[in-house]
Image (tube, rainbow, N blue to C red; front, top):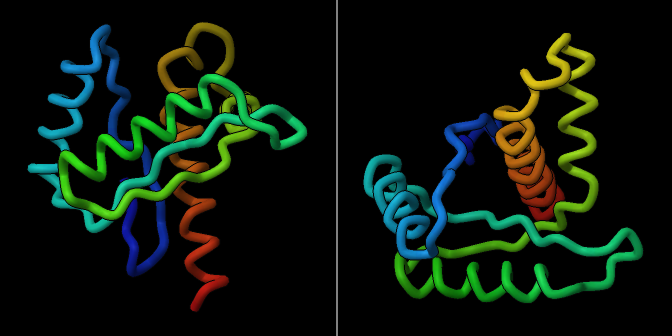
Length: 123
């Protein structure tokens, strides 16, 4: 989640579900609660920037979110965010098993912060 006015991203929660239906229901609950003006989806790519199967799936997912919720949806390059999140957590003294539940949240925070940085460039 983030604050668009101050361009500050912070982790909200990680959704751990098995089915797309459950994932969309969880997101719907968050959309109802937080009423976002935009959604940001990480776009996985290879290190050289080329896309692969997960890229295609994330693009489809972003389209589904936009269609379901009627909210502007942005794709943001997520290359190396999990790695960077792990390093940031290690620097903060969170290592090993303690990182497991936090890496996705910190990576999502970095993806959203990248989106906000792009908003600054456009302003």
